[in-house]
Length: 287
Image (cartoon, helix red, strand yellow):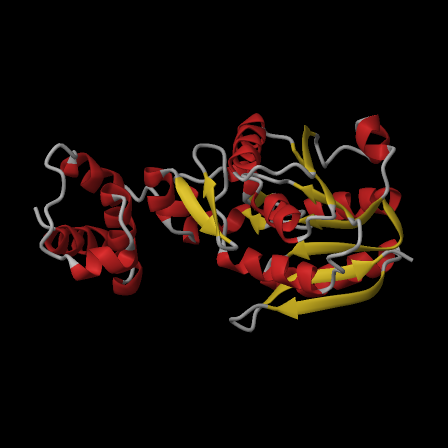
């Protein structure tokens, strides 16, 4: 099978789940992975043969079942970095890159900034910030052992020396947190916590609800701000005066977020739209 034939077949296989553009993108991504070559090389050599030892049928079956291509190849791109991912690690999203860009824009790269990433998952937020702000010190926490595994793996992959990773349940009251954390004072706390109501599961694509960790995605219908409230409350004890709290938020609850943060005593609350003009990011300041 040639590269051209492979891309055509994969595009067709994926068309029941994804639109044409997404299907074609998946096909090329798999071709890069199988051949270990760049996009330019593949485009310039459409008649190159794909290794006959590759189990194409198994690959088709995995794609037809809705398994995300990132899990199939074991990696994902985020902020121009490659992250290894697998079971228990949420696939990094482009919207989250916008949150990182916002934080970096507001930071002085020459300042020794203390940063905490709550619910780190694959470590993509913490590692991207640690790379972009080399004078900073970043602490990443998560309650899931799978997430801690992937965050550690990616920190080693990118040779990150200004970052530490700990297991910690963000839903616990702050007096139940590890003293290793509570003895520190942070300039910035960032989190992309679970925020999708359980009610929305049925409307989601199979590649998300069937494979990505539900613990990193969904919250009870009767308390959609569960993680935000807990994290924002704990952040009052962890942030210095004037310290900043950043969230990725669910577009349906931006108004409720604003009210909650105001009631907790935060100031300068800012809701920011993403590239699709949806309110998806939030920043506020501890008084």
